[in-house]
Each structure stands twice: as structure tokens, then as C-alpha cells.
Length: 317
Image 1 (cartoon, rainbow, N blue to C red):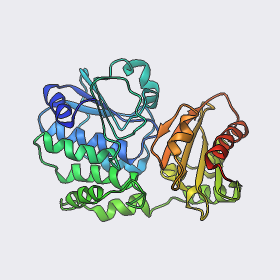
Image 2: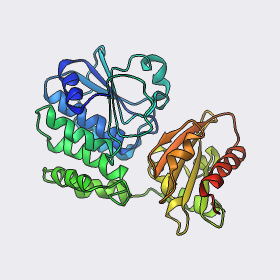
Image 3: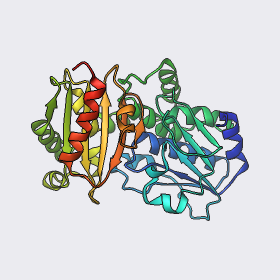
Image 4: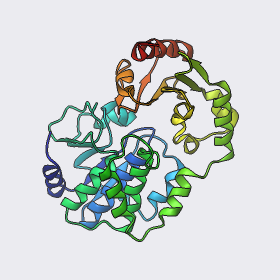
């Protein structure tokens, strides 16, 4: 592990930098990558970001005016990535080439010396905010929009238990910049496509409840995605639905991928640890939000294995 000051020094000492976001990209990995990308480009460096997965169109506004120039990368940085498996197909090429890791997941398993992890940060974007300060380049309105996106999405618009006083401080500083944050909030938290509404209706209608309704499980199959016409953009935040049901302490979403694997998302309320549940399946994340990817099992088999673990976690139920 290195300090944030050492992290800044490493970035200042290098050029031709590639920033890598995690697959199934959310607002935090994208906002953090792009905020840092703009800051480093403002210092005259050659920088671009990549994500080896479809980026939801919801976040198109983050890429407006971004310079994604082509160059031979010489310094590889993962941002908001807790495990090399989370860079997807890019792991084969870049898995052994990571020079720097910036993250906020306590379960980070990237085994390199140049790694800065701050689990207390509600979002990786909080870290990038502090990091840019050490780079001695101003946070522009465009950068502010990127970082605000990261913080607001990873905190559920400041509703989740990971929010701290510092989270609100950073957000307040970002909102002093001249950018249309009202539009960002509308795009991220109010607008829903018809496909998303139909998908939510189907999930609520097929939700299964266990352990005196303290656990809810939703399954998003490829068939359901095709039936509703839901795209990647329609899936952002969908994993939080089971936990919104009153009385549910552990919410599980099983999403079938095109290759037959399942992306599992677990969301919990206090005092249950989502990361501990997902760790049983090789995954990780945060105390209240975690995930893993499982192959070789049907949805029914995976659900039963998840329920067995959750039963042990709930204990007294």
C-alpha cells in the first residue's frame, strides 16, 4: 500500500496513461476514471480510459468533449476495481501489467505494491477529488460533473449508510462549480425508460421471499431482458430493488449474462454484511453492497446455494 501523496507522485512522473474501469460499469468507476482523465489531460499528459464492457447510455453526458486520443500505453491504472477479474476480457492483456490501483473496496485483491485503497470513502470519486488536489490542477466544471456522478450513484443519491460528513463536504465543493447538477440528478434518479418500468414490474411480480420475508431474491434472465427490450442503460441501479421492500434485510439479484454466467448482487441492511456473503462465492465489495460472478450453475442451483449462505448469516431466523 502507498499513500495518496505517493499515488499523485506516480501519476505526475508518468505519461501515456491508460485508466481502466470495471465491467458492468456504474457511475463511480466511470466518473472517477473520467474525472482523473480530464485532470491529467489538463496537465498536458496523454491519457485515455477504457472499459471492457458496454457502457450504459445513461452516462453519455460524461463523455461529451472527452479527448480519447490513441497512443501506446506505458502506465496502466485501475480505478474503482477490486479484483483483476473485474476488468473482464481486458485481464488477459493487462492483468499482469497493472502499475497502479486506486480503489475504495475493503475487499480489494489486486496484489501490487502501488495500491491506494481507502475503504472509508463512500465512493472512489471521493479519493479522486483529494488526489486531484495533490496534482495541483483545478477541478473544472466538467471534472466536477464526473466526480459528482460517482459520489451520487455510489451513495444512492446520499441515502446509503456509506455516506459520511466528508461525502457531503466533497459534494458541496463540487456543486460550487458551474455545471447543471439538476440535470444530472434528473438523468440518474428520475428518468426511466418504458423498458425499465416493465422490467421492474416483472421483477416485483416474480420476487421470491424467504426466512420470514427477510430475504428477497430477483432473477433477471436473458429471456426477460429480451421480452422487455431492456438494455444496459436500463439496468443501472436495478440490483437495489429487493432491498427497497419493507422488512427485507438481504436482497439478492441474479442476473444472467449472455455467456451463461450469473452476476450476483447482494444488498443488505444493518447489521448484515453483503461482502461476507459474496466472499463465499469468490466475490466481494462493501458491507451493504457486494457482488460476485458465478458460472456453471442454473439460476435455481445458484439461488439455493445463496440461500444456504444467507440462512447462516441471518442466524436466528
